[in-house]
Length: 203
Image 1 (cartoon, one colour):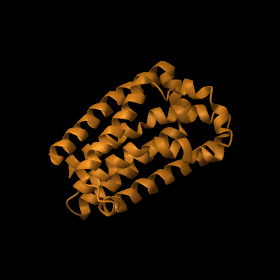
Image 2 (spheres, helix red, strand yellow):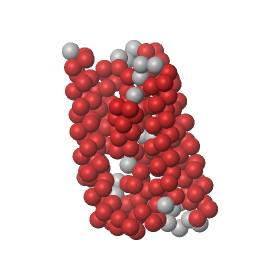
Image 3 (cartoon, helix red, strand yellow):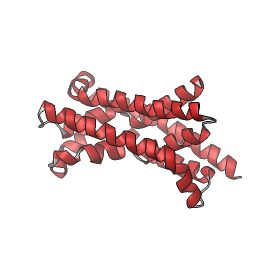
């Protein structure tokens, strides 16, 4: 059980990347009042938790209904995770890039949904990992462990969002970029392992 908790926690933590998300959040919400920042942060995390837990509950049945094997889903999920990792390593979501695109997010009430909740806190990669760990659970207790990990990671993300401004200033642009790329490398390795496991099961 401890092994499942640690494995799920590390995987989801790396995918969600609370510190990287906080850096992006700080950029998008730099002109907002503190009360609004907290409100948007809470809303984003609540949405993400419901999405991930809901996918854990119905994702397996959805795959069965669509006649998609878990092995095929592992391969597809691994590829999606690798794309996410590649974008992190190449800095495609760096806050500096978003600075010039703030006009896209003038309606700050929608920032909680996109891009914070989806795809940053509960994107395809995170949904894939959550479902994979849920399907590996052998009983209700282990299933509860996976859900507890989802909530724990999202609570860390919430704390990071609330303290986004301070974290961004503490690490600075260089520090934020280094953290994102280290997380991306770890995520890329996990993605390759997901694909390898899926291909092995298919063959």
